[in-house]
Image 1 (cartoon, rainbow, N blue to C red):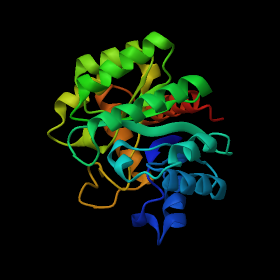
Image 2: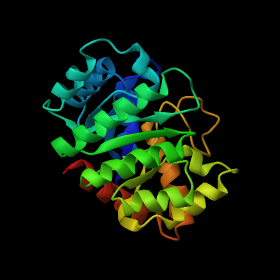
Image 3: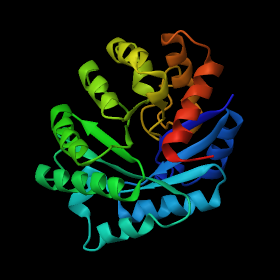
Length: 258
């Protein structure tokens, strides 16, 4: 069985003491590839270094909306320059967030637009963070789609059926994290069941969002993506092996990974 964790924050302090063991444990669980996700210029640089150190790990570089208020002059230029580094396969994470109030919304919109334009200019997929702002996200995606094709993924999707359908119609992928396994997430599982075979992805968003049946483990890790895959395979009426192969092929196609 081959699995692909499309979203993990491997640079975070929660992994500092045993990162190598965590990546080895993921491989034992069948996780052949992991995208290490940057949320700032500094963390993006660390993700590039992790991609160079560990086989099967790739990097996404970007500036997450909740951390933009702390950005330093020149950080955006650093992120743009990182696209030429080995192992970088995506731009982000980016997006919008109305749940937290860490960054003025206009600044979030500015940087979301920058990330999408950079994706369109450089031909790398972008990774979208979304929280309590579905329509705001859709408005900007629609505007961007008028400029040209979109290539990216709605990460840790929690939106509506209508939003999922529209994102797929715009050419985007939909990725599900541990929340889809929770008892209260029946509506989200129904959405996951409806996503076309060639547009669905899985992720951990580790160290956050541990899935059932390991939800009690506070620190999530890439190996746990197998539990999310198992849940969605059942929801979609297929085997775990078939769903793992499907989502891995989708991830490799999106991120250009062989």
